[in-house]
Image (cartoon, rainbow over all chains, first blue to last red; front, side, top):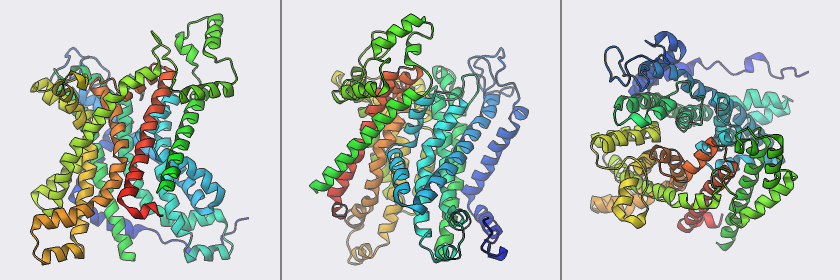
Length: 295
Length: 315
């Protein structure tokens, strides 16, 4: 039914040029390059975790609270488990929660924002009343509230964190749509009878990607911090899964005797989030520069 | 001005009503009966039925909602379902001053660090100090606040033994005991906020320093300090005020986590303990009070902003 109203050559050109330019930015921006390097190490740890970790993360050895040494580069915990192995295995949960929650929040939030902004009227009113309500609270507090309702566990915190970030994406997408829908090319597409779904998908969304990408990068770093905080509070994943927040929670009683238990898991969180923030900053500058150049 | 004030106040009350209603119904639509939690899932059917009647859970949900809402309006948040069944309002009132002093001190420390840092970074652009401030801002935003707390405990409590690691002492027992217990948690809560403000002040100052009126002030030979503090800084503060508006939200969210590092029985700890114990009246009450703090501090900031900037009042 929905025959394409525009010929093939009218489609958007592939965005290769953008990537090549961004590679140039990465080479000049040392912080972003370092961020990308460190982040790829963590991604490798997340993917190959069990293969890389020197010990089984839950294996209790007979060296309790051993300080960092050649055998245990980051020491062992109160039960004699190797800290490096636990941190490596914990990477997977942290990155998985960080990325999956932002993907869900992005799809839901951008969807809501597109619909609210494009159609306006009562749909906009209903959606935005809710988004504004959520906007009145920090994302982390919303996530805690939702965990209070849904309960703990991996699946529940993914739902809680995803929903907590929906309002950010909805607001960014909506504000972009409000300006884009006044453009001539949207009026033109409408006049020649392009179906609404196609207008949103092919004409509105591609022009709103820049701020959404930046928002997504920022959100991943906050989602990772949020998961770590929830796990630390005991509201996160099940207690036998090593995650960075949980390792720190377990370490709390021993930090006066075993500093390494309190330092290294947090260092892993900080390095990951810092890397993402460096990349996000470069991305923000890069995308802004392009906007300025177009003006 | 009074119409604006009225409109904003009504808006805040509506948000509070919406939060209360959402919390009430959401806690009831999900599986997990408070009666089950109270009897540790071990009571027989008769005991469960008796307890349900006693708590009014056998009534239609709308009646329950009406009764609960009426009680909340009178300041009655119900009782904890555990132990001596302490009234939730009492738990919350005991916790409130702890959380507020923590957030307040964090705010103060953060501003004391961020304002000079941002000013120095902007006025000495690309100097070593500027790079240090930028690095501090990145680190502050990347460190989880509870981990900052753990680091502070390792350094200042466990090793140097300058400050106590845990607990809270009310102000009535002396200023120093109160402050010494709050100092480390306040730094942990305030770090991220301080990073945000320092960055904001730096970029706002850089913007203002480029304007014509600052160039004029410089050109007519005013001393550097006068140009910076009389002409540039007040104008750089306008965007910063908006960020300070979300300060309280950020600091409260930080306090919720950090209280649990330092074993301070504030609102955050009440809320988290309530969630972990499935103590629904406590969870409900804590969420309501935490939300009220957000909503009314937002309202306060909006009103202050309208006082500072007349354009908003008449918009």
